[in-house]
Image: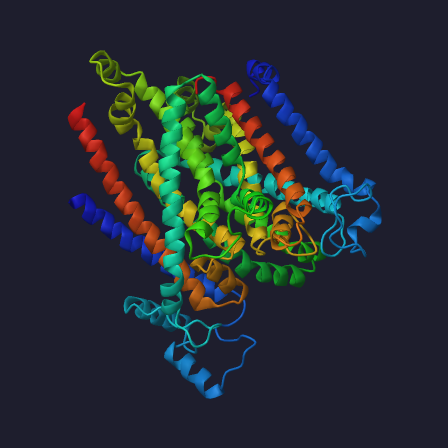
Length: 305
Length: 296
């Protein structure tokens, strides 16, 4: 419990740093928050400047932004004038989350299967094949895999839609594109630790007892060998969030990643800040969950063996 | 410290030799290739979206520019950014790891905690914002100083610096681990007993003993930086036109993909070249790791 509390305190500290860094990056970015091509009536502009204290000192601007964030107000987008950042995020974040979650599940499930599959046939043809595939997928970034998948499955074969969102078939290619390198990474990670675990005494004991091979692999060995994979889940979430930016752009998916790129190109400061802060908050919380999960798993192993 | 056994292990590994040959070929072609192609290939021409032919072996793009020329000159930028970015990460990662490992105790724990946190933050997202924030400032600064060469390539310089700043974490961890192991060895005690300063012990005794390991991770950092650069360029936030890199070529190719007119050459050739380079680098890195560190 003390551990969880300590992590919560750390979480607040990290978030505070993220907000501060983001704010000052927004400040040094060229172009004021409201000078875009589209002119707004001076009266409204003045009111907005007043409301957000943008004509005050740097400290007043910073404390004003911090105060608004504490109230849960991410402010207005400066490009999409009549929409608030929170509103944009409410519409786009579920899409990004669905894509990310799909890729997360696919990467873990396929990675674990492939890793165990390779470790079980260590040195044999299936180990070689699985690891060759993994090396290919790791070496190739999503913007190489994605266009090639679109070309082959979307255009030449015509099996799957080449873009868009909303139907199950449309989700297949983006999810695979996003997950592919991490399937490979998890497979390699797990293969290494499985091979180590499979050489240990308790596995030999299980085999001697006559436990079925599938059960030895997945119930006895995997439970111990999974630990390095669990500690990779935190960085994995960060990678998936970054990767989804490319995948969303490539497949024309209306998610938060596309808005992130546009907010940089449009110099839409508050939208950019909002997306960065929300992304980091999600990751920090997720990392905390993974850490707690890890200690729980670790404790059980200590108790068991 | 070049371990002669490691070199011979490397030269007897066919995968490593083939990968090195491919890389050498790609690097030479990128640097020298554009000089051997007709000068008109660099300029927009009348033939837009021409499929591969004997005149344009890789076809042409929307503006009638030759894809082969663009892939080669893009390779120049990608490889340059990859190598220089990796060099920046080498500097940061090695210094950080040496200090953390040598200081030990609480300093070490705090420094490594920072690395842990940075690992799980979307660093590329932050760097994206930084690049766009600082590019203009650097250009103004260079303009003020009268450094015209920097004005035209400020974007490239910011990219290299920024990507080096992202990719040092793994190297810092490795170097720290090596430093921890080396500092308890007797020759370090001997040097300390002789009254040598900490910086001298670090640079003369500890650092030279891990050059092999550092070389391995440098080889693995180059493809990572190339991927990052292409990631940014793919989104239109890295290299700016008229310069191109493999990432921006792929973005152009992906944008021109549609089911009615299949312009496959716009995607296939940049993708294949980039895949070849990245895989060769990864294979070479793995082979180097096997050669220098046969235990793992």
